[in-house]
Image (tube, rainbow, N blue to C red; front, side, top):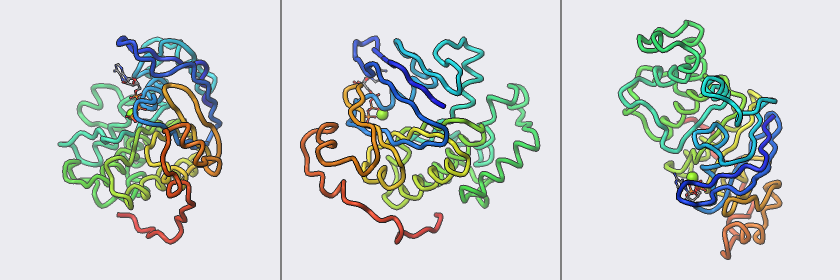
Length: 264
Ligand SMILES: Nc1ncnc2c1ncn2[C@@H]1O[C@H](COP(=O)(O)OP(=O)(O)OP(=O)(O)O)[C@@H](O)[C@H]1O
Ligand SMILES: [Mg+2]
């Protein structure tokens, strides 16, 4: 579904952020991307939709060479890649509903969107998604009135209304408390399963990643260090990726079952 071949990014400053990364992700697979600060995680995610222009290498999504696209083709391809950010990137003075609908901007023409004339089918879908992420009652609230967890749910609904093939998620839980973090990770992973959606989730919390995904990719200094199942992330592997530390607490199996399922 997604092929990444020899993807390399050297910033104008000279920093080699990605060094010939090869990666293949099948349809419906959710992967966690881990690695120390500066490893190139955000750069990798941003090179996929060319928010950051790769220096060399190739990205293919559903057979389409993303790296070869011109401006118009790239706009169309970006609709198929939903993004979820740590900082939510909501429009503060707009309502929850309007923020979700803004995910349709790539589809609805500029003038229609300016006058907020979204097709009824988009509005219906936005309601369905808000219901699914547990925010139906808040559709008319302004974004700046929401908690961090609620804001991230809006970000998730906004990414999904694009009807993407791939979700690119950059530290979705970095500003959230531990319980809300789990709820958000669970929600993202459940939605990917329901929609057979592939996702790359860039995440610092290794224990949290292990709880929810089937495949973990470890990046260090722009190179792939690990690609395997959560169980294979041993203390040795973590030391290779992050350096020497006591990893026992991180690799311990955490059971998610006794957690409160309530949606906050
Ligand atoms: N716009 C930029 N210009 C120059 N260098 C950059 C730029 N963005 C990132 N870098 C460099 O590229 C490398 C990878 O950065 P990147 O932000 O991708 O890492 P990261 O793994 O996402 O880190 P973090 O976990 O802190 O978010 C770093 O050395 C960083 O300094
Ligand atoms: Mg980053």
